[in-house]
Image (tube, helix red, strand yellow):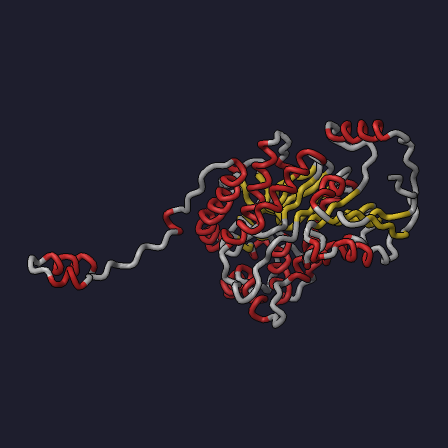
Length: 411
């Protein structure tokens, strides 16, 4: 089917629609389907595209976080094409894309509904944002990250395999929770496909860094746009370690560090309890995720850009608290991550990091096991000890003194 110039292509299993948009400023001189396919195959083996499409693909664009992220990405001139994909019919990604296409900005919108259109959505893309999936909602705010991973792992694995085939040189940003597990699942899936590049796979930790920075600036009265408060180690509730000592301000009260750290780590639960409509903080998560993707695009096509916090495989683990995978500030450049900024920690922050290392390693191991097919075993420290054995009536009735000895052992 020929795609007319000046129209946005919306695909679904049920129907195909056209939406009027701004006309393209270039022409496609490839007149043969065979030549077009050869062009796509050549792009897979070129480290730098000859004609950068400046395309961002949002997987899970129909979710609450995906919609908000797409709304902000639609307003960015650096993005020429915004491809929105979702495989959940109830989210109506075609309708969401139709709505966004009415915004009078230069970014063009494409929508793809259904698993059959996943690969077309990923073609010629520069950045793939994996969001959506299941989030923590009341009344189960205390659901374990491990249980949440089992609900979202299939989405991340399917998209990662498609990226390995269609766009192996694209930057992949994993935002689907729990990010620690899904990040490990993504990188080990790419390793098995022999297309892994540690500079091009990032776990989105923007929401935690943004919350920490907002708390710091609210207390000190500084401008949030000129301040950076990194969050290191991981992205989960038990693995995120805010580094308030890296944000410079003379009037910052050191007595509030413990309280602010607890607020950052428990922010998800607090929002769940405060909001009365049974939702998480989708607005702040969507905004921070969009800014994360925008900084990646700026680093790829404009100039090196600083990102407050991203979960990445470190270039030198020895310089990063001896952790091969850790969330730290990074700088994005033409080929992906070009610099790792590891903040210096105080004694209290170092102690919190040491306590969080074990949880991060467990989450990373969980994602790795399900990527490579290894058997996962819960660490001994995560297993609750069994309750003491109660003496039954039969034991108490014996006359050889065994019941008394058992009673003493249980005590």
